[in-house]
Length: 240
Image 1 (cartoon, rainbow, N blue to C red):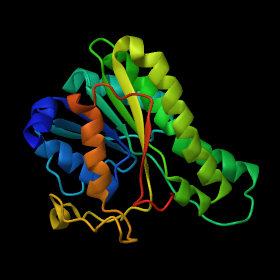
Image 2 (image 1 turned 60 degrees about the vertical axis):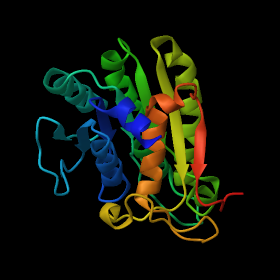
Image 3 (image 1 turned 60 degrees about the horizontal axis):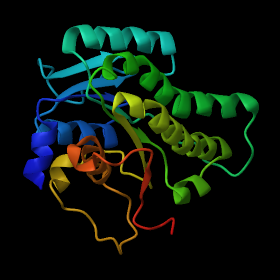
């Protein structure tokens, strides 16, 4: 099965929108391990120790700015070609039980939700010719319930956005799914846990970033060819 996964992803171009040391980097390393070419988009432009090559490129871009993202997508196309996959790893967390003011609420929607939509809108012209897969990152119900109103709303919106976009983009052979993780470690633990050094499902522990990354690999691969419009929860059952 692992060989089939690598066969499906090898040589493909994946754009990872929103990269930090944890989940973003584990996703990138997992795709590289399967032979994929990777484009990193982040506000910092950091590669977190990866050396840029013809197969690995980093672009500094604020995904909450649609015009800048559109220009970045055009540049990526001219330098790397048509993307096969887009991973929307954008997200910031805000806690608290008190209601936020309008500015805070709208800022969270702009960062967590609009930034993902902006990327899909920007890269669609370069994906619809040959199809592909898009994976959005939401949040599990358990995580949303323990978070602020603005965070919960912005991440819940990802589910409906995923469903509607899957319906709209099916004609282009583009599959759209989302992952709803629970709490995830923010550090780069890839080499400590690769390939399967994870806690048991019975253990109430924070997820390793690689656990989420593996789901992205599956959803982009031909192994998930019939899956679109779905939001998959990965939180060790805490939202059951």
